[in-house]
Image 1 (cartoon, rainbow, N blue to C red):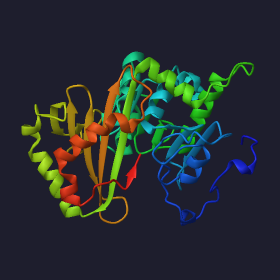
Image 2: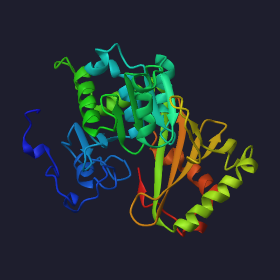
Image 3: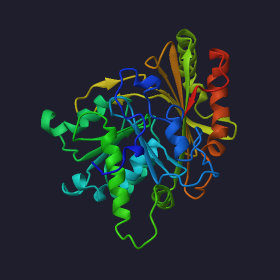
Image 4: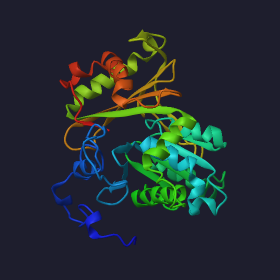
Length: 341
């Protein structure tokens, strides 16, 4: 398609077992690509490397997820969604329809796109995890004779991005959208190349930065993990208003969602600790990744001014608070996550 040599491709032959690799495109499992782009599996730059590619992208076995990289720079899925929304008019699919009308994100995804929606006066939806909730928004007018929210841009922190051109996340679309935005910012070849990092950092300068991280504890005992979640749920009322580690919990609750399109109600969609300063700690329990259960811990802290810290420096205090609130090491026997993204 792009006239590039095959040497620009990695693991590009479809195989039933993914060539022995894990199917998900993230910093932990796409280490060949991240190393080539000069990024460690914790998202830090490998400063000693030279001649790293200016753009890198990964998808999974069926092409629905995506990871975006620049030279020595990792774009979180939450930031990726926000940058695409802020620059949607650079993408012909959206521009030719008069621009996007709405954005949607799953609840665990960071609030970076919320800031774009507010500034651009877009409809915003926070849904449970699962693409069917985005699908309802896309089909609100066509199938339910409701409000037309399209063109709509949506995404999840689990490396899924999409639009109403298809009722599923589309990793190839996301990669092409990023390439289109890069082309938009680099129309004048006589000027210095505007990099992926330049685009994201300019976005942070305009909107502030949502420092965000997800810890996955895979293969834990499901009964113990369920017990841990139940304990946090029952303590929601007593935790609300409590101050721990310098953070005051404004609200502790269990996320629920009433679909604005069909009226369906989804309960028990994750335990939230919403801090008075806007920070968030979210826990979800999943049984879809490998054997046993997976506890997912989401950490977010917004800063409008300090933009150049590594995420671990900023969310580290939230990790300590999360361990105190959940007693995760006691319930699971784990002191470290399996995957950090």
